[in-house]
Amino acid sequence: MYSDSIHKRIEHLGQVIADLKSCENDISITNDPALIAEFKEEREQLAEELDMAGRNCIKILEAYMEDCKIEGIPVFLDYYRVLTALRNAEVIG
Image (cartoon, rainbow, N blue to C red):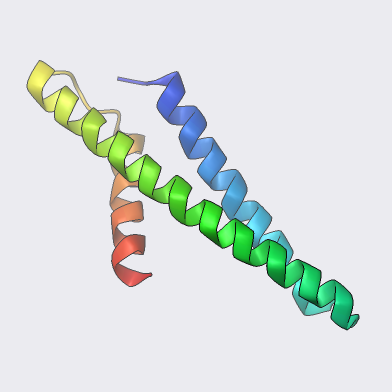
């Protein structure tokens, strides 16, 4: 079962990851120490947002999986894949 709300949260998580990668790229190509300091501060904020968004997605997806199990509703396979990837990332990170 597809959920627009869950999908939007996963998209947000993906956008934070893209922003973090962009920030890392900016740091690697910049020579100005003041600009590097700004990018590093932004990177820290994005890392915190990523952690929060990832944990939020895990909670929502776990609740979704449990609801599907209880109601006998088929699980949307993409959500299962995202949950598995997030759980693996959490163990690694």
